[in-house]
Length: 385
Image (cartoon, rainbow, N blue to C red; front, side):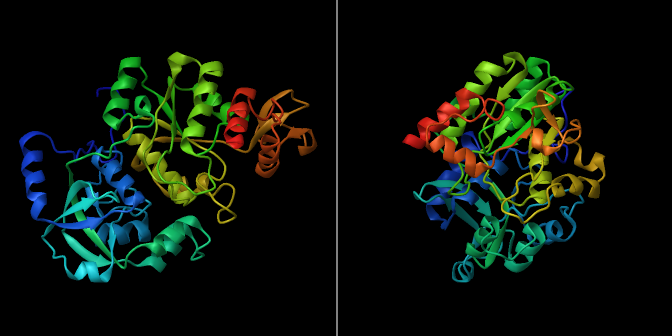
């Protein structure tokens, strides 16, 4: 690992059991009570297991849970902005004791892991909504998810027996230890990560290539866990990324890797969270765009930039690269941003998401200044389906 950035907390967590230890715990699960996980909790379990949530070794106990909400730090002082919790109902909690071990199972009833219950504590949903998402409005998808959860939280370390079987995007599913090996193999010491849950249009391409000018490599790292129902499905997005990288990016300086996390839509708090995750994957730099991880009108356009000022850069450890709103300027005859273009917006090609969707549904390719035609064709084909 020499030369690569250290994981958050200094050590890459691994909670996946192997060999005799795994077999012994698997045998033990036959007698354990079961706790059922929702899709987001399954994603979180995977992220903990592979070290993407380092230094977390399990679901948060009370001190960490409240410290994250109150101070944006874990109880040990490390920056952390999003609670990672496992909820149960009050009735379920009555049957579970502190110090007990329980099997964690998915919707299909498959045993994935064992939780060592170190604490049972109350789920302060209203506090979590306000302090993490900035609102109690259940129209916010992250807040809605919080209020859907159980009233009690179980905290403790997890030991994973079975990883979730994922058949899609197999060649792009690399764990943090694997991306770190990849970067080392490629000789990349300065690596920039790009978070996305949307197809990449020309503005995204522009900021990625600006970042590529100052680092050795770019990791495009799309989320393929749970997203909003109206977000473009992951399989469609992946086709968009593939055609774009095939035609317009240097193959020796880019990597496409999927992130099995669930979106929270927590705006600025999630910008920090996403940066720390990419640090664990081995990135030294992280692109923070305008309204990062935002939804609706809940956050200001640059709140995701300003929140980094609340931390000591050494505590965060990964270098954020902040980008303004970008567009094609007809007068500059190039992609630009408000930082670099002196012309007023009448010269800028900027299309609303609604307008783009209307064009694609009608089988029309948006202007090349907005979207690469190869990407537009993938989206048009998907909308036909």
